[in-house]
Image (tube, rainbow, N blue to C red; front, side, top):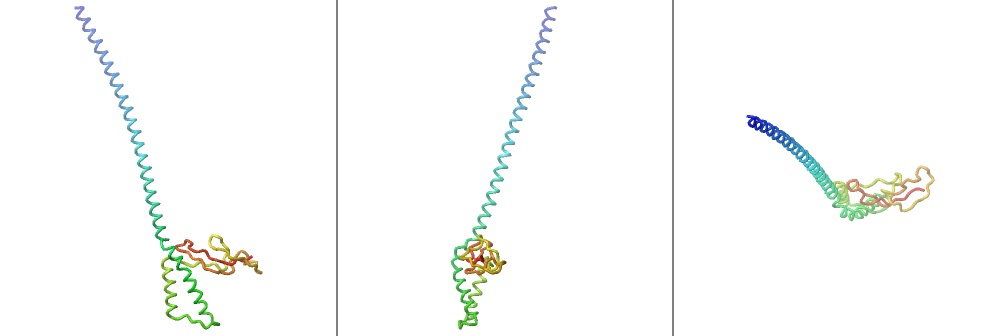
Length: 183
């Protein structure tokens, strides 16, 4: 009987050992699962961050491309319009000469219509002449041809006369005004 009791005691001890091993195995597996979950969450956060950065970069690229395209479209005819400006200057000089009562020149009605149409077309395309006579000289807008001494102190540093008009195309300079500045 003692042998039977010893065997039962050994079985109980063995069961407790197995139970402890199972418990420690379960704890180890639980820890492994927690570590794996933490690692996967970290990978997921990194992937989300990469995705958001890539999305923001692409969005910025789209906006920049649209802005560049609009800028290109708004100034697409810049060279052509700049080439037409000397013709416009000649028209302005001819009109000024015809309006002068001391000359015999006449600005016919047909030429006047062409003159007005040319001005209206350029205005519709965004071309505006710069107002420069009487304003403070700005090297960003004006090109000084010469300086002349002035008696009036208020006119020092201001544009006295405009030799050639400056023009803006959609608020961007396509030709600087050539001016005479008071000294």
